[in-house]
Figure 1 (cartoon, rainbow, N blue to C red):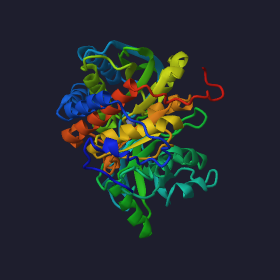
Figure 2 (figure 1 turned 60 degrees about the vertical axis):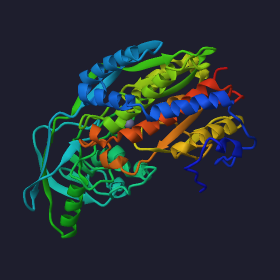
Figure 3 (figure 1 turned 30 degrees about the horizontal axis):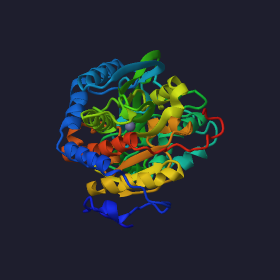
Figure 4 (figure 1 turned 180 degrees about the vertical axis):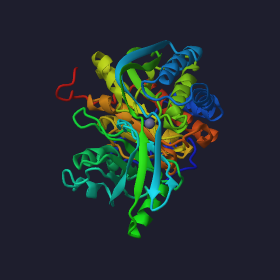
Length: 476
Ligand SMILES: [Zn+2]
């Protein structure tokens, strides 16, 4: 792959573009390009994003979806928006079912006593006192899906798997995640009294990784479902391979508690010429409750708020509105994202571009997009402008834009994404180890620089990112 890292502004004249689909060149007007370069320089010198994520993780702490802490985070977000001078600050509430993990214990009791490090998975059920049983070992989720109905009666199922291979793009997460998502459905079908799974993560530390399970047509597990740390899963595998009979004792207070209020915080920098046209960026405000949600996703909130704030300090507003959304209740099923798409149905067609930062806080290395073909040369030009930050242009047909953008993307909103280096993201993801010290302020500033330039240009340039022909069923 062609890689340009040390390039000067002169590369603008070279017409270099990483996207194979570029059929014509697009040149950013020099004055606009210069403003974008100055925004990048200002961002690289700014501590604002770090101050925001430090404030969120320290003053609010863990922010489980639907909790009292998430409500405090919304108030924090609205106050921040007001202090930073956003033109519009709104909290948009919605209702959601509330789950929490309660207290949990898990110990190996045979062939000898050893405490294990585990955590309940989101949506899992509670135990009526202690559950003590032999385990039935499954090498991977596929083996569990083949279990016969009723074959696990009175037993604890344990699903092994592999430690994720660390990768810049987080490869393998979706596949590894299956044991977390659907394992319970097969364990319950087999009649198991509990399910224990190997954590989904790339680390070898004794931190378990939590995360949401998948419902089955709206139904959730009645049994406790617990993820144990990778080293603990390794340990059980070795004992199993020695032919030992393994017994566990566990209890879990996890469960559902009825409907509560969550919400999204929406902050606008109103456009000077086409205020109805919206460039949407954001991150999610909720976090899992084991750590303080610094990487997932305090960083994303901080990066996008800081980028928009820097743009708001320009002598004039960009042509289009820049909207930062701090989404609520992402971790438990994109509930804030769905609520936003529903609430803003009548203006979805005015969302010209959307993207979310939700993959940690390491350096951005790639710009990918999914916009109308005629707009690709402009995205290529934006890619060339931010290339000095060490960012290469990736695919121009990559759907997505981030988890909370999915409902918008399904409605036809074009997306871009600034991909971060995810090499150690799944070491910390959804663990007690997701804390502020994992964020490097300089890497965070590089993110802000990339977002500030990208978002400013998307809001300022006269480029139509949407497809010119309306997709079937979309309005206007
Ligand atoms: Zn996230």
